[in-house]
Amino acid sequence: MLDFSGESLRVRFAPSPTGKLHLGSARTALLNWLVVRREGGKFVLRLEDTDVVRSSPEFEQDIIDSLKWMGIDWDEGPDIGGPFAPYRQSERMDLYREQVSRLLEEGKAYRCFCSPDELEERKRKVVAQGKPWRYDRKCLEIPQEESERLAASKPFAIRFRVPEGKVVVKDLLRGEVVVDSSEIADFIILRSDGRAGFNMAVVVDDITMKVNLVIRGDDHLTNAVRHAMLFEALDSAPPLFLHHSLLLGKDGAKLSKRHAATAVSDYRERGYLSSALANYLSLLSWSPGDDREIFTMEELVSEFNLKRLSASRAIFDIDKLNWINRQHMKKLSNDSLAGLVRPFIEKAGEKELQKIPPEKFELAVESVREKIETLSEAVEQLLIYTKKPDEITDKALEELRKTSDLDEVFDICLEALRENPGSSRDVAERIVKGLREEAKARGWGAKKILWVLRLGITGHVIGPDLIYLIMFWGSEGCAERMEAKRRIHELH
Image (cartoon, rainbow, N blue to C red; front, side):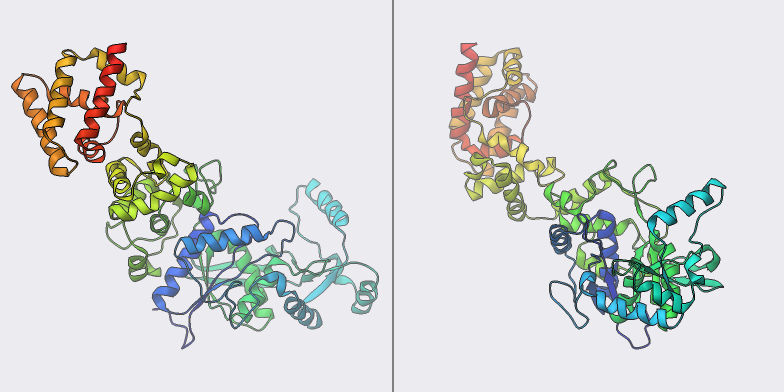
């Protein structure tokens, strides 16, 4: 158990609605959620939407919808409110300005009147000398009275005055991270347009929302140093930090679209199960301590422990995700799987598949479930059940022509079908068993007859197991389909 000296655990997930929910961000949300649901406490959803140009309501909705689809819920957030509302940074600017004014009055911050062009010119000169650039504190030397006079007529930003000494960030995964403050430039905490800088907004939010554990990607480690200084300047104890490894492609670079689809909604649309995606993402940072790999969300909550979280690189492997998705699909009943497949049939606009009666549709889905890795893949596999009796591919027709004793084989198949009317599993199994025995009695391989049976029923060289085909169309329907294929063969 995490000890917060009697205080309730409070974690937050704070995405920026400047794009769809990224897999890496979803993984961060999942880790936060697992911890708080295991330990007890509150999960806060906070939207860092200060980038007014790139943020949009559509991306905000995608984030909310994707989290809910994954089974991640929250106790406070922009859609449900809470004791520390509002939960959008764009609606909290007055609070940030108030704290910036406090730092300004206490001499922990100062106005900066340097224009972007001036900064760029000074940076160019320093870089030309082969030196690293950081803000040169030019405006720190402006006397207070002069600064106030200039502020009346000239635009300015406000910079945090980085104190001297060592900055220590205590990280649950990486231990103490120590940085000399001389490496950190005085950073902007309030832009010239009156909007708070990222670091200032995050720290003020964490303080006012009483967040006491921050779990996020290790790309925020440099920000954590700045945050630690701001917490101290605002006379507040920092939360516990845990910076997990980023999600990477197989080449070791940060996961991007050149590696694979990166948005959670992409995987939802492709027919991955939410439980499988969450299962996979959890295993990229955590291990249960044994060789188990398949977990439900409930099992993850029960098993999850921060002590088993690793700082090792997290490499995204689509093949492993596909395997895990298959394992989760295997756990579904046939009717549950059929229910999940139906929306993909509708989205694909396959009208004939939509006309299949529920009991037959469930049977059809059962027949292809071992051949698919995602729900969307079922659509193409199921199309075989929409083919008309006289439809046959060129490949299937060619295979029929190559079969010796074809007329005799057709007669054998049709006789077996007509002598065993019905569509039950027992009937289907009896037909197939009888045809195997017939082939053996004639000294033929079973494939010679069963191959023609498949080609005759479906008109395709590949498809579901024969048992399912007979159960779907019934022995009478299969005989009708074989007669149609025989006529076509005779015409050719």
